Image (cartoon, rainbow, N blue to C red; front, side, top):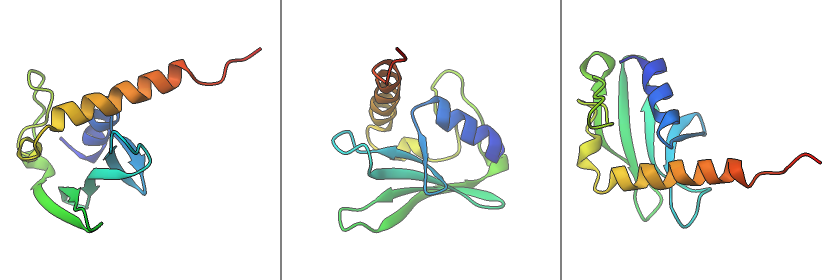
Length: 108
């Protein structure tokens, strides 16, 4: 997968762009990112925000090592499986985005 394919995957699975990175937010504070994908020239890194507010790299891979997995939903080789409850966090973010669209301002 390349940067564009990973970005498209992330945005279609509940991630949102914040500060130039694809991010997942806290369920209780949807304006605060807690997991992000940092896209670099040849690699993508997964970073998690520590309670003290500092970002820590937990995984990373070159774009060529990341493969789509239609069964699991998570790209293989990126290390997202190392993050506990990533699937639940992604689903929560995705649901929040869907419901925000449904309850958005209506045209008269």
